[in-house]
Length: 318
Image (cartoon, rainbow, N blue to C red; front, top):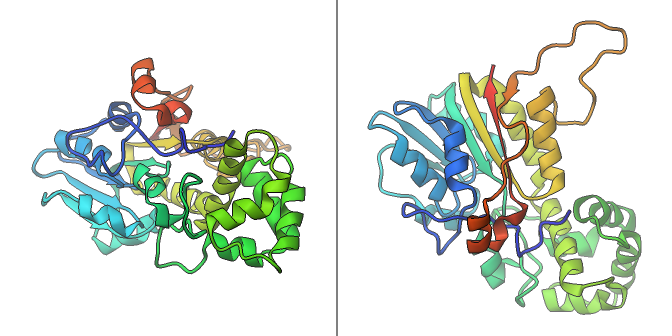
């Protein structure tokens, strides 16, 4: 299923975070899942507006510590003036590297909210939203070179087809890819309006839903979201202290499948954790705490429509 804009970003609300920048989802549930110890060390992999971090800080004592990662430079202005927090302006795929840099080898908990922030959707020039006119950009980290325009302007037909099919579950992904390759020699696809106009003839069903799926696919490719998630997950077992917890919120089935498999089997791929020859298979390093994912309560759904596709999974280091 697609994480279109009505429910992709994140959700609830906290006095300690910038909810103009981003409304967090499953705020209490996510932090409850971490089972915060007052003198523990915690990591928020997706700082954003700082609401989840704010809730963690509320539960930490004066000797507790929080490291907050966010590759989007805009997030830095939301960091509170608190000696217990260290802001790391990088992608969470570099988790271990930056923890080592701060002389930290193990932590008590890690959380990540994988939705796109409301701020990113609402800033027209970021190119994330089909609601605004702007460049086809979609970079979460403006320091990187690859943009959505580069993808649609340079990728071959087969590669585009694969992206739209796998990351957006676009019904006619093959036709869309062929159309893009045909029109881009005569039409510039640099802006959102140009792109939508250029492929208008092949749009299937509800145009808003269709373009939301197309934009989701491009955004995942531009930011290598699934690659970053897999790299981050693989670092968690060695980073967590025994009994340490990890809470992760996903917003579409691709992410959720990766998190679910890793929590259950210790593997980011979908291979079954079994040996055909009956040899001993190592126990997964994490114990699943949430047998079924936690979803938003009716009250939160009413308050924040973007929370309706959110799924929270929690696991504990064995």
